[in-house]
Amino acid sequence: MADESLEIKNKESILGNETNEDGSPVQEVRKDGEVVAEVRNKESIFGTEKNEDGSPVKEVVRKG
Image (cartoon, rainbow, N blue to C red; front, side):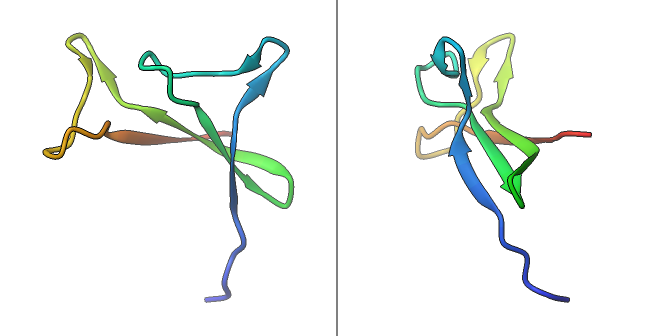
């Protein structure tokens, strides 16, 4: 399998960077300049889900 080059950038809109509920940036995964996924904090009815160390659980949502 060939290596793929992906980049992760903060997601921006006309209002500036999109953010999660905790203020951290929502990020986009790009391949050849095209957005292929978004990386967000995983939210539930109880708020942001946390790892054992207190950091937020991230979810990757594929686009397309």
